[in-house]
Image 1: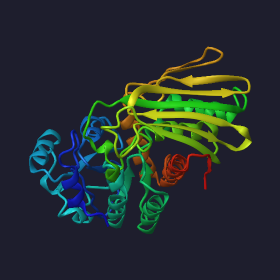
Image 2 (image 1 turned 30 degrees about the vertical axis):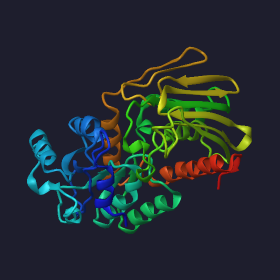
Image 3 (image 1 turned 180 degrees about the vertical axis):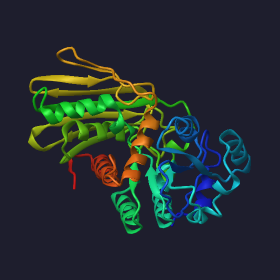
Length: 360
């Protein structure tokens, strides 16, 4: 079990990090509008998930976990949260007795995902976990097993699977609309000007591959409908004084069954946001393919891919809530996250061994 106080102490000085997080548990309700508790009140929860939960139809913001009393008061006032739905790290597990909370959404640095998903599951709560799922395949399996053991669902926050233009290119692939897939090119990154952030700390799960890297990686998998069998990867940095522990940039080439290839790149040093799928009878691309502000694309025969939704995070959470309510399979279950981490592990092996490695 990870020592929570140790991580908080280590990360307290990092710019922009909010490790106000936690987990909880409770007797599941039969409500048709599920109560969600956010675990981790950093940027993604504060600026994206909490506002999105004001637009959802099948779920709502019901609680938070934070180790900062001032922050708890701020959220309490902003979202009219009752005191009984506000938790700190000491009373984390007592959420098991709170029927107002049905779902725990883990929004923490990756190295903390496993502990809090397991604790939430043991408390009897459905679990949503941000990407990347965890640091290792073994951790992912522990999370899946804990949720199955406690008869709760587990979903990973790959919001693109819920996005209409992404769903359209998946449909193209399934229907062979442009023939069979031959090659995929995917890149995702941005210039991060921060010099002392958790994404630059190995112990917290930093590095471009774990953060932005799962976007192009996951895109190659949903674009091909296949699992990669080998990878060749190279890590680099242009700012070694900042990226001392983890990579700033990762380039990786995947090999799929049938001779399909994928060329990918991810970085904290440059802006990239493109996905192109070349097929035997044409191509289609999305650019950007994972932007919060909307996804756009075009096909080789001039079709525009510009369907829009009001809020990507709201769509993701509503879809997942509806799956829980209707007891239907999650669109992005834990197994999907595990498959990506299996490839991530192989990517790091390739970097360490400086050669192509098989993915096993």
